Length: 162
Image: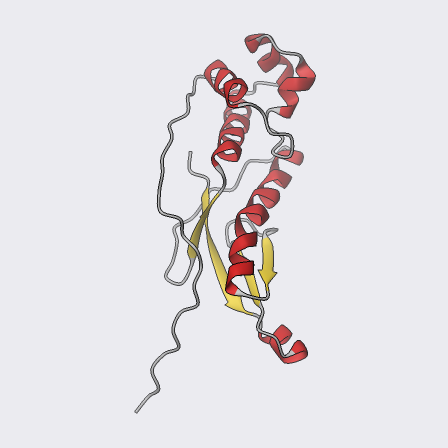
């Protein structure tokens, strides 16, 4: 289960014209409600993961499938959710695919249903051991992977035509 999504960051011409300040807008083509921005490259990069995770949490709130991430295109940056959140999203997707309710999950792992419901709430982080037990109860386990951090950088201006 991959939880990294392409993101497009562009200079916000309207904001620059209105305020005279450089500003950027970031959108995720596969996650339409995910939109953020910043006044600098550093600021916009600092908002990308939180924006993506929050927008994807809306799918869980609405009992919808998480969108399938597309391939990154030139000029886009690939933004991954944090490892703990990826585990919670994987648990949510597995429960949904198998039709496992929080009550059934709680029964399988010997936990109160109210606690089991929180295992997929990214704003109430669960312990790694709880997530591992829950994933095992739906036939999954976690595999850790480390990859280079991608951050958006403005592309250089094209060379002037001669």
